[in-house]
Image 1 (cartoon, one colour):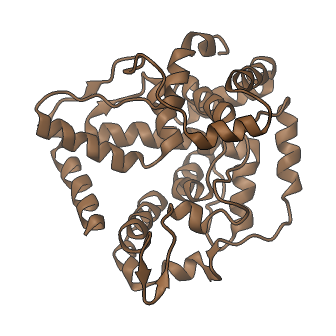
Image 2 (spheres, rainbow, N blue to C red):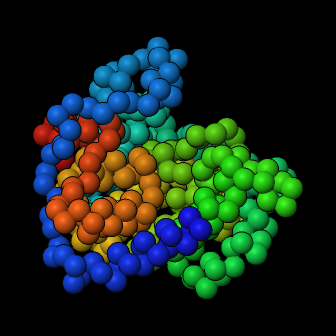
Image 3 (cartoon, rainbow, N blue to C red):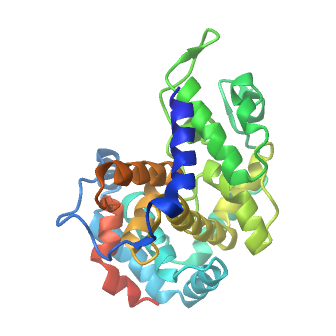
Length: 315
């Protein structure tokens, strides 16, 4: 039922977006006067490394400020996807401030990526490969979807409605995200590389990245190729830009809102994901309220808007 409601919500939002409201430009800056609460897991992880968010921010800022090659790559990939490079900068800064520590040089990311080359990975849960799992009858409605974004979004919706935290056919499934259960074979919450891209996100964006950047399409049956894509800085940057492009397009097409002038919002969506569902929820809220409800930044996006002038100086 939840899957059906989600699908109907998005479909109605798409059908009604043009006649229901004109495109609105989301104002710049933060809607919150103070930074929203930072999740405890991020706080504990940072304390565990005997660091602080301020120190981690300064470290990633220094990397971007001193690595001309990296900044050139960011500007180039942003142009290819039709976005302002400040959005890519914001995503990288947010990830390395709240989730991981930055390396001192771009070359270190290449070295780390090379260390995973030749490793044997597979996407599975409790011995069942994900390609076998999505062949279950519950996923039948996803079969006609050819684009990787709509296909994997559909499969994620099915997981949420039919499997997450439930017992199906005598088998219990974790009350956790699809990406955490099937797509992180090392430990929960693990993402990789310069952009800290999740493997499921990479699979979703594979068609867009292949079309724009020319990289081979990814397949869940070859987990090694997926990890190569998200670990290699050059390919990873394409997925960062594609994710931001997708979020901007989702909010335009579904919610009738242009968020391209607010890097804090694109950073928030990069952090939390599910831009399609979030845009649909916002569209529904605006229709029911009769007033304009703006999307809001989280703690991660709040930092990007708060430091925006400083981050723009990097470009």
